[in-house]
Image 1 (cartoon, helix red, strand yellow):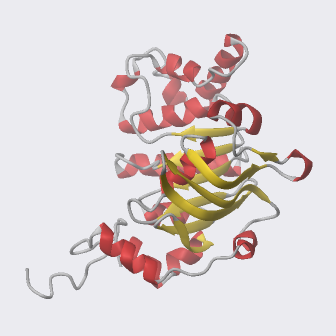
Image 2: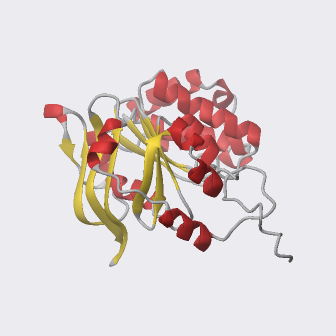
Length: 290
């Protein structure tokens, strides 16, 4: 390798690069451009009052702390995308909100005014049932030996009656004919895009208000990535869902989201409107490929 081989190095976004700098180097450079982000600055990015708030939240796995007193704000019917190098704590944020890890300090609040709930200590099932929070896992979370229909029924496991879950599944089939055409097929025969649609639809059976979406584009061909983001856009703008997303395709995620956060080492390093982060040369160099 010559000294000039790295001159066009870039981050991990989908931009064209001659080489990709290491995760450690991205983390180091991102930390060097980190800003002091106040809760007031985060509030200013929200339309109206925050609907989901993290207040000085520290969380992790076992005794290992990953998140260090982070704040987060997103409004009702808004979308927020978390980007950053691998190991920055992005998915840990989603895990903390949904109850998949340990909370060491801080609070998680969902809702407005008198209806606001402190869900910090609630279980995942309680957060889904009481606060309308659903988690859409990364790829390969469907049950391959079950039919499409059966997978949707599994999404309604908290419904009091099986008939209610089945009615919700029928509404999904009416909305997405491509799934209806496959309803009796085993999920293992679905294409990558169909599997992702099924994963999203299974969460929708519970009619949640907040969707936590972990890497929606992972493992998908470009045409399916566009389809998934069109579905998420419809869920936000036509059905009023609040979306908090982790997306390694930083360009696609920031194009979609109202708000973007850059995370580094378990903290928020940069926050802004999605469009503004797309135009930020520091973010572009590290995460958008140039």
